[in-house]
Length: 149
Image (cartoon, rainbow, N blue to C red; front, side, top):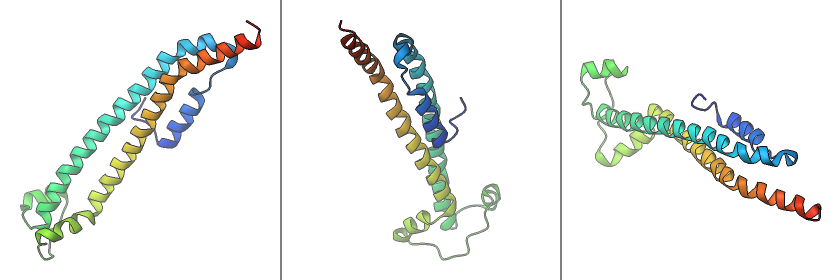
């Protein structure tokens, strides 16, 4: 799997995988470990990407802090694709407002929140997969009951 397509595609994939065919309960039961492995792999990939983005955000935030204080060298400005800050150097109590309004930081933050939502979704799917064997066992018991066993 790629580091997951998007949330909508993941939801569609799970919708298809969540189906338990009443006529093939034995096969459905043996498919549970494969489903678990599939979604754990996705979760690990998304968590790794989240960690990387969080690191990128922290570094960008530090650099933006220095940028607004006028502390970046010419080489650093060139490396980050920035022009020298021409505004007034923010006071300490104003810096959070500058950083929270920074477009680059907000873009990274939106990506981080998206991945956090995806992590939540994958963790929820894995909880359902853990309950799957119990659901299949209950279905088998119900079929036995209906058959008079």
